[in-house]
Image (cartoon, rainbow, N blue to C red; front, side, top):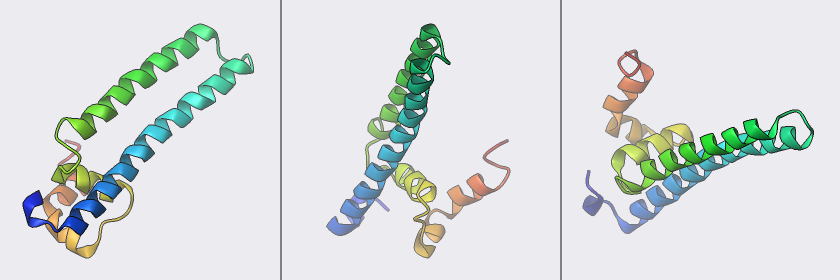
Length: 111
């Protein structure tokens, strides 16, 4: 189903879901970095390891940015990923995305 076949409300709902997914991925990464800063501040992590963690976060954040911006925020696979990761898949979605669910839930995706 292309975006032209979706209603304005459906497109807005999908965009909101994708934005929530983007926020979750980014904040999960930031939370890990925040813990590293606390460890550094408490003297449990040397400064050079913290700078490496910052660099790793930056690379991960670039991947997140690419994931959301290269194909567009209305990309059907990105919408599927967002709904799946946020536990928002409805029955109609399970039918619509059945092939991707089979790949993710079975051994096909990991092999």
